[in-house]
Image (cartoon, rainbow, N blue to C red; front, side):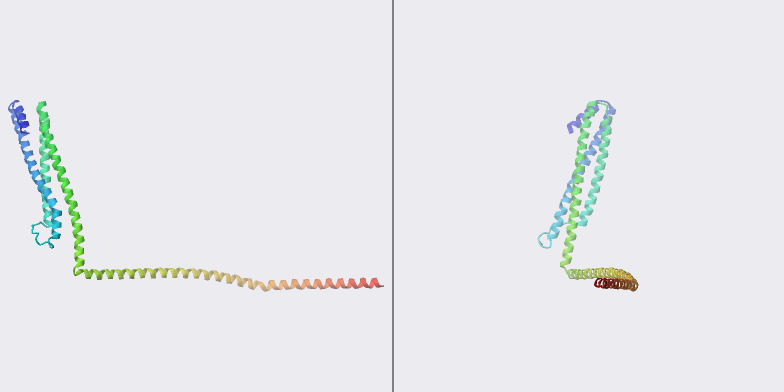
Length: 267
């Protein structure tokens, strides 16, 4: 890289005083880019260590009471969170500055008139762009992992706190609360059953009322038929009397005719 810079400087110096000033500008940009890259490298290493120690620190905090020999000083969760936010902001600022330097280098490389010089500058610029891309990818990956670990640790911590609070003196109160909740649930179930029974009774009452109306209508029809039945009965009796009378008259006529025939036969 130094050889490439030296060759580039020599090529720029051959063009005159204006090229020498442009070369100095390019070297200043490269110097700033290398300085930012070194700072980013150190920041990303510290950032990765912080994210790695978060889960280990939380697990060792849980075992500190059981193993008193572990006296390694650890940061609590809130301190690590504040340090994480601070370092993330600093790294994002450095990435932004490095992106700006790369943009300036790209403008300078595009403005170079010599083809060989332009190719050398573009090769150097591509190298700086690759470094920026790697740092950006590493930062986002480490940040995502840290957020995932922190969310998991917060969830496990809340569960552990609930278990500890239950095992402590408040566990009795929790037990009573559970019993009260169960009793309340039983009362609600009883109220629901009573409401269902009342609704069934109301439906039965409505059905009985409708059946009562039907029975009343049937009874009224039967009464009307009963009122009409004596007239029909008297008519049937009159018909039967007339048939008997006709039968008697016919029998009398037949008997008289028989007697007359017998008398005629003997005389």
